[in-house]
Length: 337
Ligand SMILES: Cc1cc2nc3c(=O)[nH]c(=O)nc-3n(C[C@H](O)[C@H](O)[C@H](O)COP(=O)(O)O)c2cc1C
Image 1 (cartoon, rainbow, N blue to C red):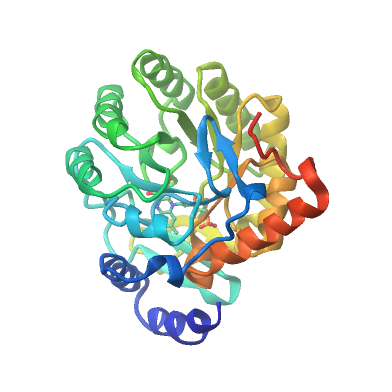
Image 2 (image 1 turned 30 degrees about the vertical axis):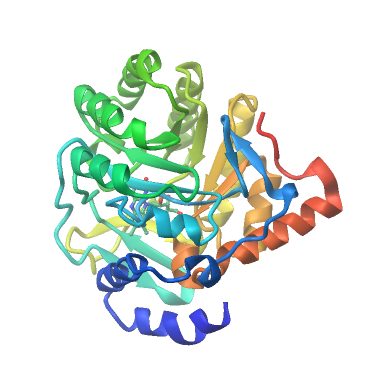
């Protein structure tokens, strides 16, 4: 953590967030020794099977860091057990007007209103086809129209180990004002007959009782519709006048307590039928362990990776391996349900 926290992170954070992100992606395109820059504990105690996908460790990179899927090879080399590229839609999107990302440095958080900028499914499929596979990789997809979602899935699926359905982005419309339950049901029914790889559904977070009911209903629909896993959760909608669109999704430390609670509630509501990836606010080993103890099979990170740097996977995997050696199988569900 030393060099990144002392030198690299202050340089990145001196730049506007999106510029820093573009720079990070440029660097990831260089043939640097990513395995040494990052790294992960190699220990059989860390191996998990996520809906049939064998992972060397349970730490995943969450969707949105590599929106074009162009650097999933370098990100895999950093040590992640799996990486999620995208979110990708059928046709390219420019996303929302800028500024669309702001940091809350003292709180280890960010707010983004990216609006899913991405190169579109055809371009992403071409990119994935030429990229070496350095570990398991998923594609995150989200389309408003059923036909578009099916086409995006068909284009990307041959190049990935599984697909994550983003049913939760706060910055596009179908997370809010469409009939989400009907859309998800239809999508799962159509995909059920076609898909060959595991399908994960990324749910929105919830706090108020009414949100809780909506999200738990979506979770049950996902499981009954044949989804192989759930991701809990995405960012929390907040207002922020510094963003051009005035509101976005909060990520980072502030989400952790909700993430642990939501994993527990979703696991209970779905009776542990499918594995859960915890996502939201994980930055430290304690955070990751809390999610696994709540019943998550894997843990995804985004903002924690931005704040803590490429050694974060090493730190998290070392702590999980040592906790698993101490407590045996009592931690999460190492082999998946
Ligand atoms: C700048 C930014 C862009 C994101 N883009 C996406 C995206 O395209 N698709 C998606 O499912 N989640 C996206 N997310 C949400 C993350 O995948 C993750 O669910 C969320 O940030 C909570 O995890 P964290 O606290 O570890 O960051 C994005 C997050 C950030 C900060």
